[in-house]
Image (cartoon, rainbow, N blue to C red; front, side, top):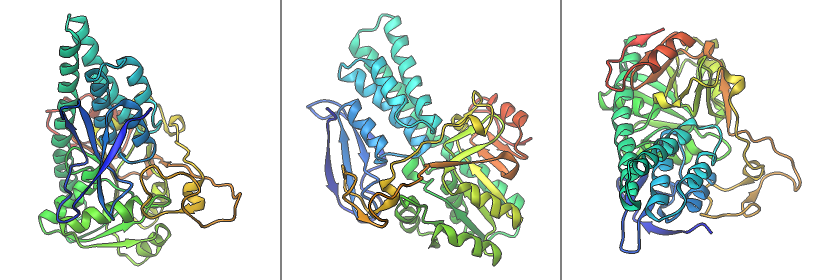
Amino acid sequence: MADQYVATTESAGLPAVPSLRWEEPPEGPVLVLLDQRRLPAEEVELWCTDVPALVDAIHTLAVRGAPLLGIAGAYGVALAAARGFQVDDAADLLAHARPTAVNLGHGVRRAQRAYQAAVKAGADAGRAAAATLAEARALHREDAEDSARMAAHGLALLEELLPGGGYRLLTHCNTGALVSGGDGTALAVAGAAHGVGQLRRLWVDETRPLLQGARLTAYEAARTGMAYTLLTDNAAGSLFAAGEVDAVLIGADRIAADGSVANKVGSYPLAVLARYHHVPFIVVAPRTTVDLGTPDGAGIEVEQRPGHEVTEFAVVPAAGAQPGTGVPVAPLGTQAYNPAFDVTPPELVTAIVTESGVVSPVTRAGLAELCAKSRTGLGGISG
């Protein structure tokens, strides 16, 4: 039985809790999540005391975003080890919680390997659990560092592509601190531009059907003082036509070896619009999002979400809300097509920005070269 409970926090100023943290109260270790289903109306902590609770939080998007899923997966393995559960079973359960985001499996397997290495070296249960937690914390710290590097590389790319400054940037879904151990991916680049006074306007796609842009990106933009405007997804074309978009910035959940990018559904149409209107289309993601084992976009498994997310409407669904509890927006019995992601081919991507540098143009060889770099290697533009 999934074991989780919630606690409401004050909703003033910056978020009262980070997106994710590890706590060790007297009753045992827990993984504390900022329940993203409840934003922006309220900031609620979700306390997960076992792996089934964390898997449920992943399934229901209480915790989401490719880099943060990797961190959550690693902490989930540490939670299983600390509480004496079967670690390999827990790792398998976590790794398959969402199929498209490759970072989840990366974080899970990294923590699992740390546990197995400790056991092989003769560690008892307590020391093996401590080694697993240390690995999860290392991944968390590295993600924050990588976020800062991506922001710097992304800002440098914007300055190169758009030397006039005063950027009007369009973004899709949510790619800020809510998906990362640091400031995020694509939204971190926008934040870097804002920090140097060069963000003229952030255009925020509402991002159907779960409104991650309206609920989460707008929430983050407001709290950091960015000038932003929310728009419906199908209004983006008119912005391009009016010459109001200087660049598109999105994140990614998986990047195939050829540079095909899986991101929140609606990203591919933006890439087509950007190409037609000669606007740079930039993907920002950590290297762990690049999956060299998937040869091309056709090999990316696209998660299919429940139909009620389309046929019902809930701006801020309550934690644990069941199908049928939202406001119906379609006739009873309507079938819905609800892929969570779409895939953008590499020829529509201007550049892929990672913590190790920038690939532009996006090619199989360029990605392979980038992935061969060490984390601390100097980044640049390759292709």
